[in-house]
Image (tube, rainbow over all chains, first blue to last red; front, top):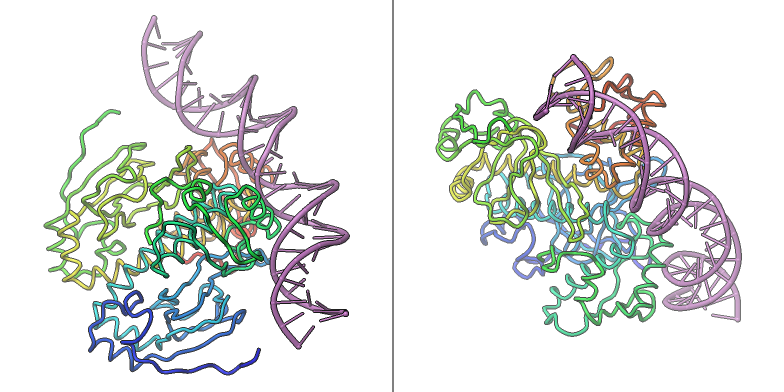
Length: 248
Length: 248
DNA sequence: CGCAGAATTGATACATCTCAAGCTGGGTGG
DNA sequence: CCACCCAGCTTGAGATGTATCAATTCTGCG
């Protein structure tokens, strides 16, 4: 809570770290120029809520840095995470004015926001944006369906292994390191957040993480720092097809 | 198994029952004309497989009549249904050449297929198609996320009630009847298919259906014919927010 | 140092799965 | 026309995985 003002920075799209992966990925420089005019940055601290489900939402946005989550909550408090938003992921839905999910920053977060109305107009004129958004949405749909298999049919151990494998692989792809050798990363989620993502309780998450550690599938330094000595082994534990369903 | 040939009919798009809901919904007559040139119908009998996951898929399609399912299968045979395809729903992904899921006809089925290559080209030239496809994909993503909550957090009884409520409501919306009074419909799925959709075993499905019947939440005539005397009561059992998350 | 949030671990309860036996209804062939 | 058959379904009894409730134990930080 050191700083509670929003860190509004203005950055050239050309220098943007997610330039080639976000919804603007296919834009030409003139199109980028138009986006530039309607964009603004917002920062959130770890733990802050970006928006509550049901609230009016007059912007759409891309995650620039940090991690956010989408969660649904039932009346009695049961929670299910339905999306993990990483840099370049898109939040919000053109043509809808209320948020459908709670959006929460799990780490410090910077988002590149576009006012919804102008964005929608621009999308109508700019096939490159609509095309990219379609592609990203189809990818998210695939990911959601992969997650449905996990939630519906995998055991607790398989769920944990799957989550770790996904994080490890994404992390490796971000760092552009060769995927040979040990993978090392910090868990961006608490045990409770992992539980909400996996449809488990935090106690079960803790037990299964301990079990994977005991069995040598993973190593831990502290609670969050994870070492994967053998990704293939972890993938086996995840129960995924050998070819690995996820193409990142 | 009376007929095993494919019932190839040619129909004018203008008369098509899904004209105003499918991927072609926004097309003008000249655009429809172009679709007409690359479309063809295929029929499948109940139980037939439309395509296997991993198979080459050189078409995309709309469901015209009947119901199909998307399922994922793990190596050891565990199955999870990840989509229920109703009339006007879209199958296949532009830009991908292999099927990601098993597609199966659960009732007799008619699909309106478009060869993938020409469809992709047409989509590039026809924003109306791409716009509609984006909209439909966003809807499917919302449905998938709603299903994630069900799979991850709902009890068996809530899962059954949710499925029945969805089918009842969709059925009511198709028939355009007022939603007052009893809703009556035939279950389009076997107990096993329901189990695959809900992440349960078929025995648990059977038990919970019996329990809902015993408690007067539903009435049954035979195994498949369902009467919902009070939809609000069923919705309560489903555990959904009172406003009903699903906007059909 | 000592506190608070996060995580671990234990004991027990319970929902759902698993295995197994029977039921039901519609179709088929003798 | 009846007996049989079989897929789909129901029901039962027991096993099991995960949730729940309850103590501790870590860990980072003021």
